[in-house]
Length: 235
Image 1 (cartoon, rainbow, N blue to C red):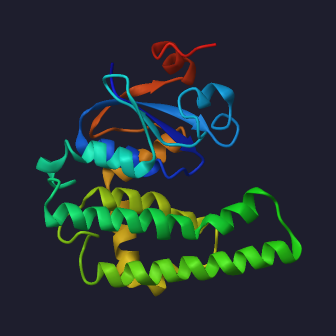
Image 2 (cartoon, rainbow, N blue to C red):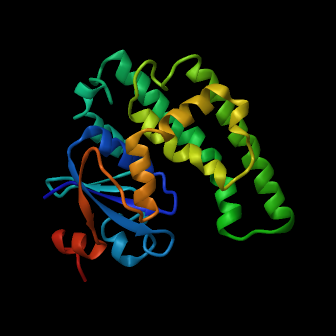
């Protein structure tokens, strides 16, 4: 069985895992999961009980959910390409530190804003959530700007899985106009550099259902029903 990533649209954080798979270069397939309709469905919950994306079905049929777990799984095979590092090394610890920050601070900062948007809040409730979210997003950007320093990439001189995860979250400012990334010049340079990367362009095209040219090992898309049958989980 070919490893298959279930990615969420529109604009899921699973974007980073698509980029990582392209950088890794191994054969893989994709399965499109519409949010919130399909991701909350009983069918998808047979694969991921939490009803969230991404989920990776490995070549042996095991299921891995949560972006950090998926990225570390892929990273174990991408050490030779500089995407990750051997466990127990200072570089691995640094990568996990940055990935954790991206997950618990950078990603989570957008939570109040997504809640206000997705639940159609208006009036004082919306204002309070937006103000709270805006402050968290601004702080997360400022902290990450300091962490990046003068480096080209989040871990230094070369791209890693942290950069793949970053670009999938950083683009959320197009939905929530609460910060101007140009006020964080190092982050702006990183964002612009990643946006020109073939793997990032590929992931954008996949999400938009546009013709996508893979420079990795992309073998096409499958449906959720296909995966359920392969996993013997069909109703």
